[in-house]
Image (cartoon, rainbow, N blue to C red; front, side, top):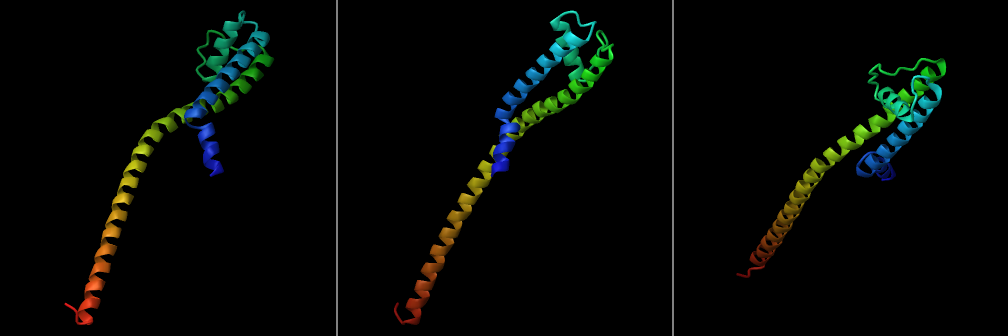
Length: 141
């Protein structure tokens, strides 16, 4: 049960909000890091752009890490970006699957209810049949 709650917290509707927040935090920190480490990132927005293209592994090439420090930092940003972007993707997929899962659960519950009614009806018929058999054996009409 605890594993299910953790799964819903990390991946799912709530998880999407947390994942997006974590993604923004990593991109913001990546932007600051690149702005401080990379000479080509003149403005903070340049640092953010480099952090985004690095984390998403797009690498347009307009700004590239040129120093050893910024290259090392880009490895960290790639690894963290892949992890967080994977969480975001998984959260979106979980939300889409959740809708279908609820429909299947609803259908299963309806079928279980119908089967319970049928079993109850069959028990009543067996009970009536046994009562009739008992009356016939006792010689009562």
